Figure 1: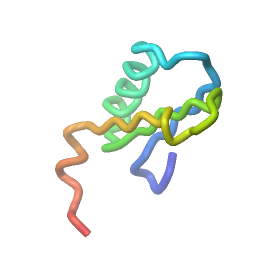
Figure 2 (figure 1 turned 120 degrees about the vertical axis):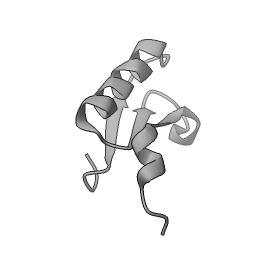
Figure 3 (figure 1 turned 90 degrees about the horizontal axis):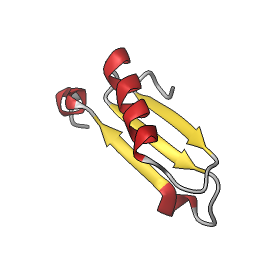
Figure 4 (figure 1 turned 135 degrees about the vertical axis):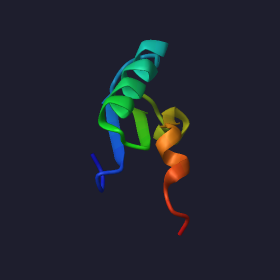
Length: 64
């Protein structure tokens, strides 16, 4: 958890499968957190394997 706002899920797998995204979305909904990041470390460029997810709570955050 980062700054009580973002949940980070770390993986080291060949392929990100839909169940990983569903799992992170469940964590977000259960905790009421607005944003999550699913990061796969089993790749050459992490930037290409970073999956951001947001919930409805994200829209309620103040702009700054």
